[in-house]
Image (tube, rainbow, N blue to C red; front, side):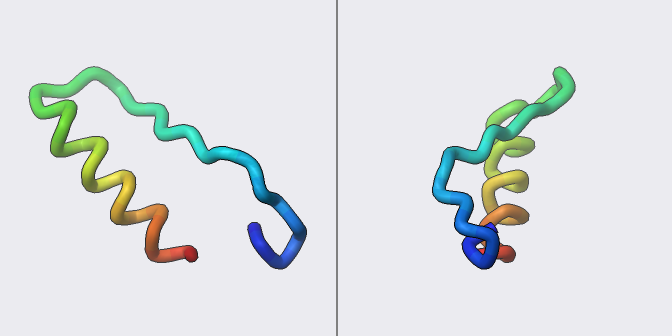
Length: 35
């Protein structure tokens, strides 16, 4: 995203599951791989 000049926010959208906090933590770690 940096290479195309994007500086906005990213949104994590998820389906309802049994462990929402864990799901969000995993999504954040996934996104951090692309920094």
